Length: 368
Image (cartoon, rainbow, N blue to C red; front, side, top):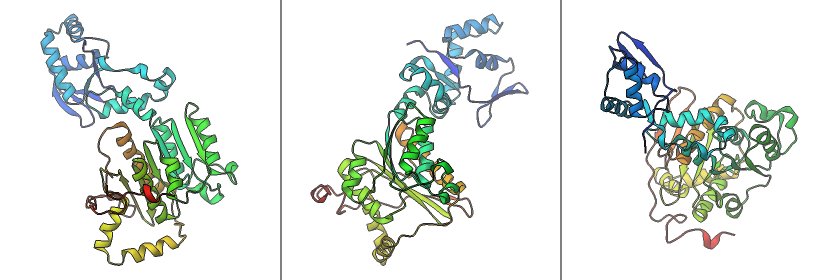
């Protein structure tokens, strides 16, 4: 296949003191004759290596085809050039290509010689379930829809209240009293008419309920307020049954956190409980107290919710597009709002005797 070189237009470059300063880090490249600067301008994705060399020669810049090939590969290794000959823009409908153009630029910018259209198509075709459409879920819906995901199930049985609006900008005063699932569906119809959003106004009350909205999905994000402990148990058991990975997170006062689990590849949620019991002898008592309460934080503001949901959505993108292993893969990502520190805790291991995810156990026998 013929190489078609393109300078990544998302990157800045400047000419200064016979040098080119290019990219986010302003990499310095010596360019006393202006050859590199001219090459950057000519490399628009329509010219082969030979055509670039010919165009430079027409500008009285004498370089060989081999020189252009060598420099182009060096620029590609620096993340500045890409070969667009293997790109497949046709995998996206024309309107979607335009709608998601900046996302596609991001994939081009983020990766080294990968097809950004195929990455975007992978995200578009992903099937995501949001458990909860309140503070976390409503913000996540906006992020996930903005990434281009079309198949989304949104689960919430609650109604919009006036006090929700400080941190749930998906809703307006006109939505007060409406089911959040239905109001979210109306928003999706306006924002992303090409999407297939399924509102589920049911309460998750068991592992079986969780399985119903998880089976066949690519990712589940748990943003439900309560029951905080039982919800995690149900989703974890459903994840064993369905094989679907899940992200779970929340805000405690001035601290946000989230974790990602995929049964068989990371510790499961129950494995983490075993770890916590080993560190804290009173852990089960604490969990019991929390599970019996109906506490909801009354101090969550939109900027803090935005930080948490942005981190979760960006990590979901890492997974759905296959960009990298998610930061929270079997770990806890924690953000402290007091001092702005971000921490990742890498201390969990799979419990070989876990009653939930161990191969000789499993939950299918007692799922009701």
